[in-house]
Length: 408
Image (cartoon, rainbow, N blue to C red):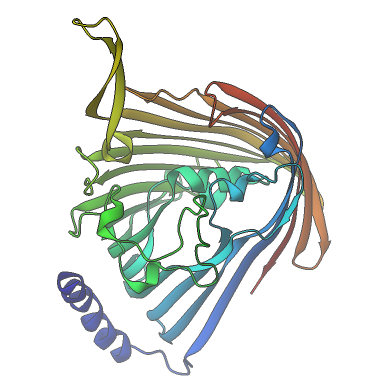
């Protein structure tokens, strides 16, 4: 923590002095806000596993706020809302009934100081989502964004980050480079704000502040984790096209045995057919090698005792070598206030032991703005998911809805 504070101070204090020295005449410190919240419903009409059937209601989204002290220095924060039980943000396990806001929680997703020394550069220090994949922030649809968040959002990152516009050309576009150096946040900021774990309920994925003992990638206590990303848009050569490329590296926590590497590539292309109609094509591929930092595990081997001929079990300690690939393809078509989205997502996990089948999800939805800043989307999802208890693949059909609120 001392090293982090020194690094943050080195980045921020000169920026505050410079910012205060260049305050624009007439500038007044103020607070800006942005809200993107949704009430979600997942009604699983049929599923191979009975526990997945039923209806789940929950809140998912965020409220962002910025305290602008000068034109180029501010304090930024994001309060996130989501269920923190295993699978709850994707429908969970209603067990044939209806669950409302089960294990619903809120937590501080980001809290950092931001300084813009010039129009092309932004520096940050604090807690943030490291720049890696973009789908968890950009995907249209109902559950597509949430599923991407579960896999590829690099949250709980404590460190420093920077973004710089490196190249601008009317024909070849605008290109930004982003980078971050961080560690897994173990401070009180990593705690949840609403929900705590109930006795004996093992489905909670997070309920208290992060600790060293929980392990996991980036949980090293050192600033030896990093991302670098390249973004491009505003192409005169190809209007409506943008891309994103990123590389991630995270060290192993106490339960890991190797450094994790991640790669992300995404593209978006919007075609405006008329003032009323447009189509957005979007795609993203994310891959983690040594996923979860190759954690240790114990497997049981069956054999025969050579002396008695009886079957015996032997415990063998090994590590899970995994290459995880998450792919999304989709399109959204808009006609006036109406919009429709079709998306396919695949989660493939190739493992050396404890094999998991490849999951596939297809979602189709339609929606429109029903009030200023309020939208309603309804849809259908077909899923081929990995079964927990029996192994293999299960099938599920679900009806989806999202009542969304966007505001400032």
